[in-house]
Length: 414
Image (cartoon, rainbow, N blue to C red):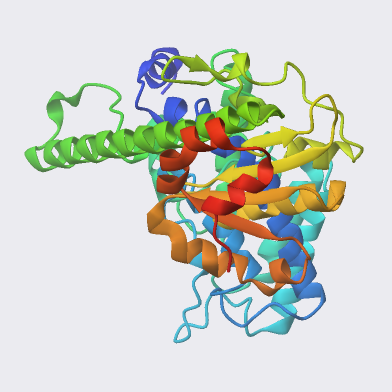
């Protein structure tokens, strides 16, 4: 297919396409890059220290894949190729120690790579080892390390690629992946003004076409079965979009309650750096929040992570953090805990309070994550507050509260 301009225009114009619901209008996607990078570093360290288990379950790799899977639409099923299948002995990175080490070294070399050539060299090297069951599904991890150089990879993306470029590339082959990558990069370079340097945009286009959520060409020749499948996919996507919007509305509501309380208690408050343009019930966050984020004495990467914490309270006129809150809906509670942990080790003044704000239905999840030895041994006291409690007591705390310790009255701990 030669003329992609109208196809891309259709892709971007569809408010329910992954371009609009995942790529350009999803704060969690941006937060995921830092979290997944940290998770990959933990996988590498676990392999180095011989602490990586003989199964995916409970491993640092499972955490990475869960963070990716939370991106939903494009990455549904991302963990499936990594599930340990004992009868087939695949993927052979759990029981085979040499393969495990090779996988760890591959991830380390990729995360440290600075050029396209280095990345391709590492992929070719891994492919030459012929590790059973370890195919280009790994590319979905690599995408979050180098989004401008490596596209994500799954069945839907391959199907869409083949339709879009009239090709017959196969799933499960690193050499086929590299050919797909080359074509996508060349096409993307020609259409940068319409898409993005980030290859997630063009991969999302392939995904839309591969799942038949987007039709190209004349759809009059679809069979009845194909038409029914297409309409079913559309209904499913619409339902997902509605659910995601409802979740986002809840997230915004909880952020507003926290900003409102902090402001009423006399603190300087700010939402996550990419949430300042939000509003709840006509109340703009920017009218409550600090105009600029206070300078915290820490490295640039850590400060970037801290700025993504959903709500922060500071002592008036200072950079002294007094309260930090992460609102977690359907996303990884652990990733929010990691951001609070980063903050804890950056400030460590002993006066601050850390909270995870969660739906009532996720209470068991947060208890499980806060029980992790790595969190319990870190010396950070993270409590949690249920959505229902925050909503119910917001106005009372604003009216009768005196300081951040009042939040403890509606919080729980393990």
